[in-house]
Image 1 (cartoon, helix red, strand yellow):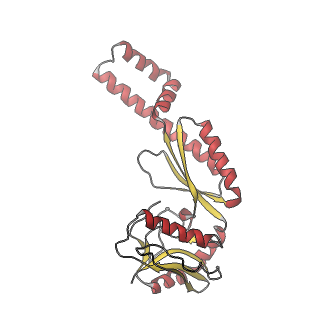
Image 2 (tube, rainbow, N blue to C red):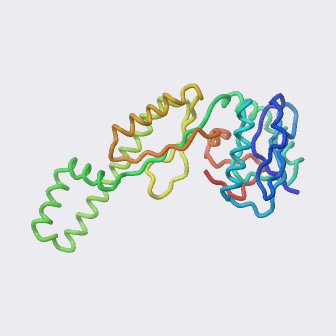
Image 3 (cartoon, one colour):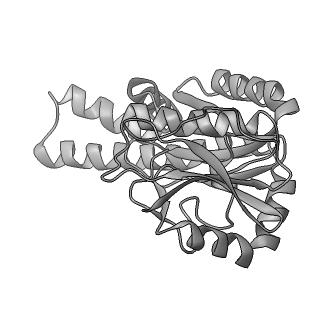
Length: 256
């Protein structure tokens, strides 16, 4: 039977609450699987697991319960090993790395920040900032909309200006928030978002970080800033891409 892995803790981590269950229908019991100075939070992996809301919430609940009493390295939803021996082998092989990460991430949480342009506001912004673009648009209006080629050229000019504004605004968001966090990890690029970044923040500094987000939102009113968190520090368990997975563990589905 495959083993579902929720996270990694120190072997000295307090016991999990009695009766704690996780993913599956019915929900599978969750327990600690020790390996040297570490332990994995594991349960039986259901067949055909998909990121349904019930199971996503169950995954989060297990990590929340474990994280309330000590440091946890969270695995992403869908992290599955062939069996328990594989899990203990991975923990043994990478013990030094996981112990270092547990120390580094103790009392830390993750905030994911996504930003997108408010279309009408950013169009006004780029028009106001570019006299040539503004004059060409005005000339087209005075000509009843302009020729097909003029319309095409205007569209290309606007698209170029918006892309430049996206790059500038993304840099401004990064610069504003990086100083309020301990580390940053870029998420996968996706359509519609000019920023998708996770920030590592000490719990004691969370309020100050969120205040910085609010200040950034006010200073860039043509942006929509979305905050998701506090989350377990998924993006900082492994170095490199946020979706990196420990060798021996596979993710049938990974969601953020």
